[in-house]
Length: 566
Ligand SMILES: Nc1nc2c(ncn2[C@@H]2O[C@H](COP(=O)(O)OP(=O)(O)OP(=O)(O)O)[C@@H](O)[C@H]2O)c(=O)[nH]1
Image: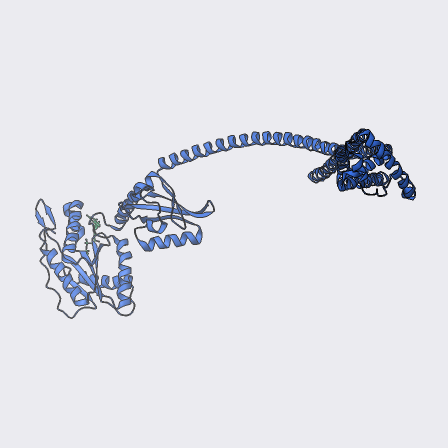
């Protein structure tokens, strides 16, 4: 469409230029100039006629003194020139004589002839372009040329001297009719030629205008078509824009609604998470950026996102190795559940921490949640302690003794360190119960346990393994030091007041079996078996003594005094 418009516009411009050119050619004044030139020529010829018709102001003598008149050409064809000339000459001569008589002014004649020369000289009548009628009329042009030559000749003769005036005047009078006829004929021919010329140009111009009109009409039609199409497209675009605007408004409304819902959801989630007993945080896996952290978590680590923008998961843990291990497991398995840890920061409490690897906005993130288990840990520790402790004596119970003792035995055996075991039993304890009651028996047990703790070292494992039976595992202790420790125990317990009774302080004795861990890979059970045999032997030998297994070479301890109230 645009190409068509351009093509039509160029064609219309060319046609317009072509038409203007034609109009300019038609409007050129050459034709009128030539016609006016002929009219002027007619007028001047008329004046010349009047001039030669007037009497000469000059004397005849002057006229006679003029040279012999030269043959004058006529406006007739050259074949009759000589005849005409002679005739003319004779006529002129006679005329000159009569003219002189009539009184023609030579100066006036010369002036008229000069004017005619100027009108008839080639440059005066020369058309300005090739379309001039004079160019298109060669006959007329030739006739006027001949007329010009004739007038020029007369003028030259007059320029030579005024004596030729009468002769010239006579010749002019003889030729004036023919000259006027030629001028009239030229005027007529010019007029006719000009009319034809104008008609031809008008017809041509009409054709060019028609072409220009067609082109402009086509251009207008195409422009109208374009405008219609543009209008239709504009309407279509407008409808589309309205539709798009409507869609956009709906979309914006939906986005706003969704954004509001999301914001509300987020606020609700934040509220729930803040109200939750759990501590929750969402941390960037790569950069540790805090995406979310609830108040409890902030309280836990003692800071918030305002203070710290980044928080790496592994840096949460108080023990760096545990943090590294936790992060490694999370990367490997994608989730870690209920790891018990202490977080770095102000709090020294225990937490159960879990984490999951999730994808957030195209990046990995650590969703971390934890809750406080300090109380649980304390209770657990208490329970564990209770489970391992003998409630009556406060010593480790049998199970704890076997647990801890087995590890100690294993350790000593591995590093070949000496270790000994004392197995103690209260002598005649049934009698104490029977005579003084179980409360007193319990008090005796507590008192002996206290003495055991006092006499033995902190590193020794002391436990109540039966009703009135105790064991003491002595690390880094050979048989003899163990025996000596056992002996000290026997003596101190013998001298101690074990229970206050209405009858007075109650004394008692113990029997001790001592065994040393051998180098042959003994177990705790075997060691206890060995010590038990020694204890049995001590009981058999009269109680209140120490028996070493294998029996030590040392002499047996002297028999103890019999307790007062036992
Ligand atoms: N008061 C009290 N008595 C206990 C406790 N545990 C066991 N007994 C008593 O300790 C007594 C142990 O008696 P026996 O096994 O016969 O030993 P014994 O009387 O000490 O005799 P020997 O060991 O041979 O000297 C039993 O009567 C038990 O009831 C306890 O925790 N408290």
